[in-house]
Image 1: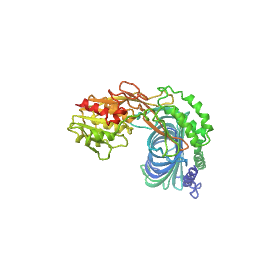
Image 2: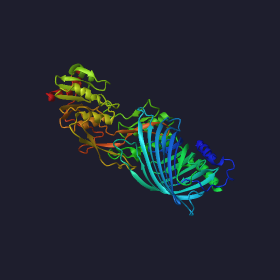
Image 3: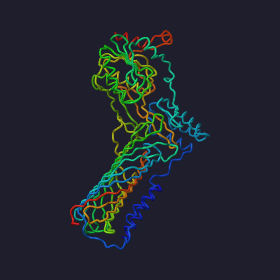
Image 4: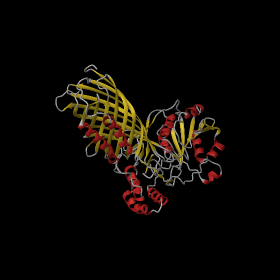
Length: 265
Length: 337
């Protein structure tokens, strides 16, 4: 978990490490009414899914992201898709089992200003987040037959979201955070196979599922049509069931953002 | 700006607290390992109700023994004795890596069947040959009766090799398929091989999987079907030979074959190992397997521990064996005439 703090600090440095961070004038113009970004990077995952194993698995792998944002008056609609494949290893020396995790997440955030200010201005936005994720893990057991079993975890959550936008060094820093209030979960009771592929959906609330999705991004030169994007994401999930699930994932990505509409750069 | 800095600081704190989401690692003392194994079986094992097993009582009896175990070897012995009470050949424990596995020995495991593949190929089957990967040994028992010996259903992706074998036996009027002493293997493979004899899609059995914490929590009945598979199907008379040591997937195969109209099963009742094991692991790295489903015949009968009776009962005796006679195969050849 030491790497959690290291990565978070790295993400924070994207903002706080800028010289004269607090003294810069706040830009009010030049924001586009739509943007599209792609990013790629690395992801670090820690997970314990008791339907597969009591062991904690951790590891890393590639991560990709695709996001689009559309401003509609005082509101903003964001859509993002990201995922990747990771190889995870057991944290126990006595159990050399491994997991291959494939994840895909899709988020839709509908945000608006608290006060009737344009979206482009710095400050707080609040709204609703509809988030979904699907994870397929191939668990390599160390039994004599070296069998591989597959497990599925699908979650759709709905909850409040908040976003803080701040102009920093002529770029745009954004901190976003969402937490689920209600969710529908499809968690395989045991290994999935041809005779056991039916989805068992369970609707849960805060009593059974708690989590947070957050991201910290920085896009320098926010008034340009095309720019660079630095993105750090952190999400954690605690799902209580007959067989509990605990997940923490972080990713650090670099990408490009293309802005459309709005004032010309 | 101050707010953004505060929020960033909050995010750092949040990530530092991520450990609380993951929770503490599982304990690995003997009591904890016992509890973990006991609970996993409680959640997943499929035959508690069918076999009238009081799992709570077994846990109460064996837990103090596990806690008192002075070594991992002793602990493994206690756990194996508890699992042995389930009377299930699909239950096993691999406590010290992949090289060792402790498994319950059933009566079927030690049954004397007097079946000798060497005798069959020396005395009854001519022009015998192996297929490409030596999964199927086949030949002619009479000029127009083919013979196939399937020692197991291990592995995957060799069902298509049956097509080549059936092509070489295309002139046969009848085929004997021998799954005596067959230890089982891959379910999907057995179903695909049975499909080489299917005339149309047929339901041959039903499955229910554990899907909840209650011992009676199961999925609805799911059909098990066999359907035509492969480049060609042999739909003439088929005689399937079985015995007490036809285990697990071999029993699935027999169940599928006997749903076909021109198939006759001869020999002895099968082992009665129907559970389809899943593998799992403990936090100390030991792995184990357990039955997770209940398989039913087409008549909705559970055959776990009982076996599948043949259509024609023929038992090979010690005298037969001493005289070099395979009574089951001879009976099949008589019926095939």
